[in-house]
Amino acid sequence: MTRTAFLAALEQLLAPLPESERKDALSYYEDYLDAAGPENEARAIAELGSPEEVARKILDEQTPAGSSAAPASPARKPRSRWRMVLGGGLAVLVLACFFFQHSKATPVQPVEPASSAADSSSVPEQTSSSYLAVPADTVPLTIPADDLGESTLQIPLEKLDQELKLSLNYGSVTFVTDPSLTSDKYATFQFDNFPHSPVLRHTGGDGRTTLTFEMPENWQVAENAPEAMLTVTIPADALTRLIISLETGDVRLAPMQLKTLNVALTNGGLRAEDLTVTRDLLVELPAGGCMIDHLSVAEYANITATRCIQLHLDGDPADYTTDARTDNVVRIGSKTYDKRYTSTGPNGILNLYAKGLIYLNVDEQRPA
Image 1 (cartoon, rainbow, N blue to C red):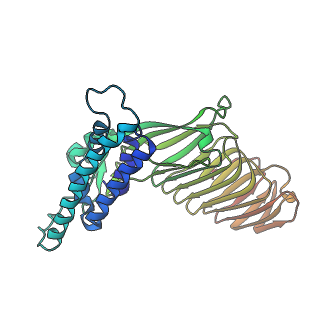
Image 2: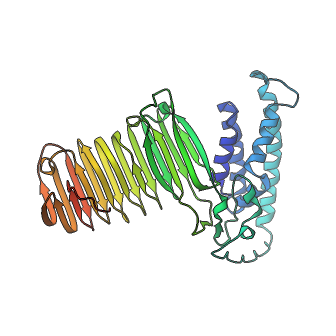
């Protein structure tokens, strides 16, 4: 398990603690790993144990056995106990790292590569827990389909009404709009068929939330595994700014109204039904295409795609200030333009580029 994954999992497991207590605990474990150094970080994490074990020790110290409800003020005393334990462990670790650096390390035995049809024997023993841990120097191991799971996260709408940022290096994202949700409700984030690895969450007090998912190092998903999908259920007008960054998935957007939309997909395409963007629309699809059934953009849109771009604009394409360039042709209604189409209008600025074809207000649906 990486340092980032360990600390993120620990932060989630320590959620019952007051914020100041939780930050204090995380700060001590950050110091612990800093003292180990990057070259000994993996060993230090292994010696600490799983995030669940560490969190259980801290929470047990905070709520001694036999007590009813822990009062607010005496919480300092039990906290000092785990501070002392950790401080002693930190000193031992520093000494251990010093002697380790000045001794001859035992050579690491090579690890046999996992077969493409890996069974449970190719997976470390830790896979029975909530988090997967793999030494950084091993070859990639395959995650069997039965090691993929699901989880649900709910976030109050007020914590993401200014900005929601999703950054995943694995999986696709689908937005579902629910008009029954109001500002005092929660947005739901449903993770299906993801490896059991923690989702990193950062929520600011200014209505901004970031969710990050990173595949465990040196893991790869079996070819027969079902598609990993994050489904976000939210009111159509709940977000102001939406930023999505994916490495290996597609994005599908239900009808939404946004001020700013920024989508960057390394290996994927964008599909939207009814999209209103009042300020900036920025889309980068170096290996995919873009299809939007109905697009209303008030100020500026820039879409770059390798495959086709198909947009059905709100109004006549001639009413936009458009620069559409392609290695093929631009088709607007029944008219075709070789490699480039430009127009000047009052409705907004459209900069479009695709290696594939560009379709504007073409009734016939074509794959993106």
